[in-house]
Length: 182
Image (cartoon, rainbow, N blue to C red; front, side, top):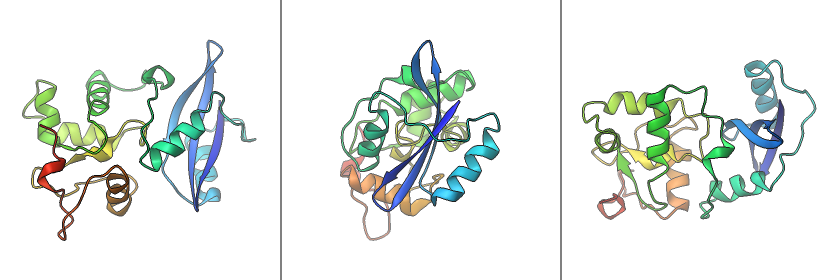
């Protein structure tokens, strides 16, 4: 297992990955933090990791950086190790991938799409534990009143990610109605 720190302007994103059947597969993406904190956290969370960073192949790091800056990039979900997720969490994350760039859905709306209309909190929990933020756009899920809800990188970062994708927030930090997916 390997890690890489991607420099994205003044910020740094951490990747944990390994080769599976000769191809790179992501295990985890760490949202921006100072480089030393990222490295410490990666080694703590993945004690078996090779301590020397190694660049992931296939331009995956560049595509993740582009996604972080709101650019349109398609990343095949087969690059992600979803095997450690519960069935419900995997379904939530796959459904979140269907939210178009520049649009948002509510936690309850996402639950309804899964056929579980009363499971908004469970959806929120699955999104809070998303091991692949940026690729799986959990930042595109908001509260029913248009407020941002939660995000592992903080609400400021969630708002910035949405803004980069063209989702407008009003002066009360709520998503404008036209950004909701129909």
